[in-house]
Image (cartoon, rainbow, N blue to C red; front, side, top):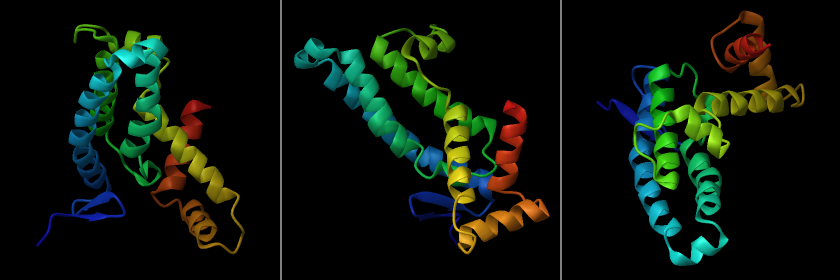
Length: 170
């Protein structure tokens, strides 16, 4: 008996969608923390100070770590606030590392100063963009057909989550 199994980069947990997302994030968490430590060493290299270590660090975060952390997040149905908080904690750790600030620094100030986006909104953006991609598929495509069935029968999934996001964000 296996509690969870890795499939296409995500962990599938026997307890359902939320547990699968949580297990996936926990699996990636340790790797990203190690990456953050490595990024710190790269940024502190004297050669990067010439071109701007902070800019280089932000580029590393946005172009390397975020895509690996949020890979396949469009399929994370039923993500919990606890899991989102864990993702935000990683981002704040990276920002604190870049700016060498103490833990007492308020996280909204860090996000504002570095032009960041909370993880919840990154995930919502990716889900809405994916839903838009599915809507624009050919009528005969399997993805389009599944989306129509989810919408028609009001089944839980990407369609219902995106409808809720659109409603909430007006």
